[in-house]
Image (cartoon, rainbow, N blue to C red; front, side, top):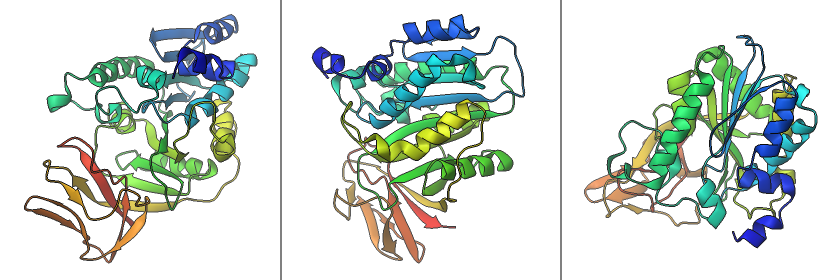
Length: 331
């Protein structure tokens, strides 16, 4: 976006998109919070007195720079909270992921930031996003260090393609059973229609926090990509209400339990010969029948193994070595 385009945004949205936390930080500091700005795009708000019974909540937006709807939603939530800072009942870390990509309206600068939260990065190690991930990993470690057992991470996204369930979430299987159940229930209260259980990391921020910090973490898809300042915020109403309650230590509004899916197989791009057997306009959760070809990659042929599997995140354009889609089944 141009500087003029940013100036045309509502003030609260511009502030968050550009990670300009100065005024907000001051309001919370004046209210007695311990305020941290450990890195550009990261704001931490902690109560003055430590309490392991208090929840620690990490909200991340803009991990993909073109997924702007959650930025607007969280901007309005933060603005309202900063006007009544003592309503905040959790310790909060707010992270704006790809600030540089947001500034130019792109998904990323060099490579997908949401594949960088891993120890081995191969040929991605020298990318711009690898350095950004290291910064976020350090800030996240510091935030959760000494926190109580009630730890949340909601990584808020919007999807590139249409979906038969427009609002869905990815939840790491390794989350402790009780915390996982509570998270899925809360996601339903936030309007999430489907949850995919993920057995293995693909380098995502939410899997990292679940695995490394014991957080009840989820990658949350809240509809379709839109232009910053022009998103239809009504599509985020249920999630906004649930977050409003979470940050204030209040019960979330009632909602329907989401459908739950297990991951049947991950489709990995092994070479530049990778080809998917369906078009780029294929919706998330499109069903395929047993035996149908999902993709080919040289001598490797991916086929549907169950009576019915649903394709999610099909993307043949990812780099070699990364996941090009997942196939899920109803539980």
